[in-house]
Amino acid sequence: MPPTPRRKLTHDELSGLRLDPGNLDRAPRLPVVALLDNVRSLYNVGSMFRTSDGAFVSGLYLCGFTPHPPRKEIEKTALGATRSVPWTYFRHALDAVAEARAAGMRILVLEHTTASIPYHRIARADFPICLVVGNEITGVSEELIAAADGAIDIPMHGTKQSLNAAVAYGIAVFELLKIWKGGGADLTPEGRRPS
Image (tube, rainbow, N blue to C red):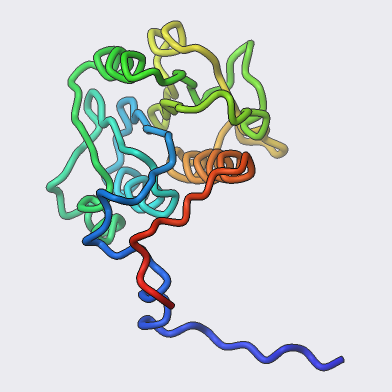
């Protein structure tokens, strides 16, 4: 059997498959807020904005010395996602944890701890989630680990202890999206343009 012919989709075709920016407020978001704890790289923050848009998370909490918009370095990798992903800056990460907890979210740190479970073992019943991602060098702070309801990690199979913060976030948040959608939720927004 000959292979099925394929071609790359055009920009217009891709745009027709995407959420209409005018309907962002009406579309159901993934019940996940990411808390970035002292992430230092502007490019990592921009990448996390873009990934957050792709997974259509509920928002970002930028904490401590995590840079926040407007910054051209963030925009370079965010490619406009700073306008489609709700975000809030908190000087102190524990204030963001308190807000997330008050909203009924389970606080999960993405970190290697003595009690971490693999990131793919989260259940749909664990949502809504505030996913804490830490500093590129020191990881999630001890005070946030102590304040969390649990910890998830990405098993490493080589010589390095961890992945780049933005890469780890992307893996974890898209797994959370898969778990949420696999649980029967329809995340297809009504506001999509016809394809």
